[in-house]
Image (cartoon, rainbow, N blue to C red; front, side):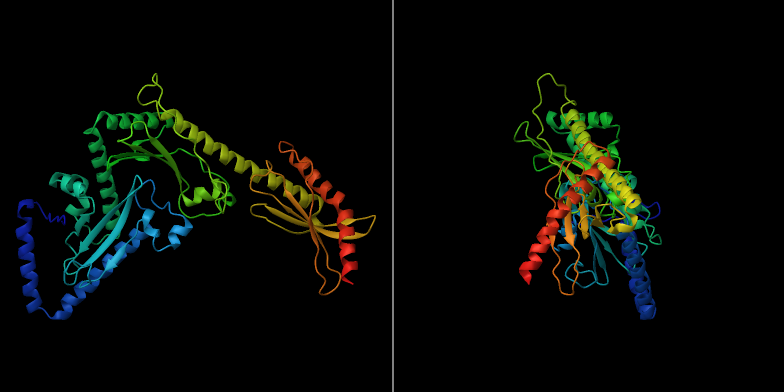
Amino acid sequence: MFFKVFLFFTEVGKSGTYRNQLDFLLMKLDLIMPSPSLKSLEEISSKKIQQQIDYFTSCKMPGLLSGFSSKEERNDDNKKECWNSSVKWFSGGSEHSTGREGGCEVGFRLCYAGRVLGVRLFFTPRQPWMPPDLYIDDKQFMDAITLEMVQEQLSSLVHWPECRTNCVAELAEQIYKLYKKYQLSRLHNQTAESNKLLEECKAICESLDITEDDTEVLLCAGEQVLCVKLPINFDLPPPLFTEDAGEASCVLHIAANSSKAGSLVATLRVSPKADSLLCGPDGEDRICLPPIPEQRNNEKSGEFLVSYTEDIVQIINARIKQVHQSFETRKQIVAQLLCQYDASISQYDAVRFNTVELLLLTEEEDFHYLVDIVFPRCFPQVCARVMLRSICQKEGEKQEAALVPPFNHKPKGEPDEMLEAILRSATDFAPVFRRQCNNRRILAL
């Protein structure tokens, strides 16, 4: 069922008649005017529609979880539309154009509270001044839309600005806001459990000092969903983010099954940029959420999820503090190495300060060797990895390498103390490493 909106001038009640008259007039013009004129109109209109789509795809889609797909999901044809909104273009006469000659269809997906909401717009290039027909793949939502809602909430359809490049993006934003109001009204009209979810949502907003724009609630197939954009400060040095695309944000997704009283499941959804900071470039250090505790009898409605949400914010802030402190400690250690061994450093990571390579010499035995220092993501909680490598003296000679044994490392020590321990471990192991290299050279003869 297609939701058609034809509102022009002030004669809303005569909109159907107006369009019939317009179609009849265009049919007459098609007979009178040379065909190139109508063809030119279609080409100009199609270019405008394409410009609107290009602008639309360059904008951030509305929704807390918009753009939260991972690299793998964006590169996988089967998954890339699950979270990211997408746009499709179908020319007239195709199997998707609903049999409209010369028409086109633009389809995109809005993400609301973890649910993908399909939206399709049907344009008629011969009539660029006409608003597109709108179809949304939620039949209950479509049936609930009234003419008054269209006039107040979907104003872009009432006064279609076909000359503006942001009209499709503006319409998508209006559809998202209307759907959010629709879900809120459904919860208000449901059981006491639904009202309880709204109370908890309001209490979380007051506790975290956020607005309703930072929340999404959904009632779908017996499941209640609450999404909260957590107030996390990601104002950090750019090198800490290995992926710089989009916004850094975290959304707490809480789902409650109405058939199972008290069963709540929490999931932390993290944008790709925030994920690169919190979980590392390979996602090897993901945050594990604690289970939601059962509500105690003495807890008031609205306080149940507040303390849990605050705990999640503290967990994320602690991880950010740890990552930032690790970065600053690595930076200080590399700076001290540059001051003390400037001429000996062959290379180092000047962006994230994860690795350093320097040339050292054992004065007693006149033995030169390379020292590779690798700082893990969790440094200084985890000790740095130190490796010695030999310097090849002949062409074709195999380079020897050996990992320095574990040494005394103080995670809470000062950067200069950590550096001293690292260098001492390398120099103490150097004589052993030299004997290993000499023995292997003798065996190779």
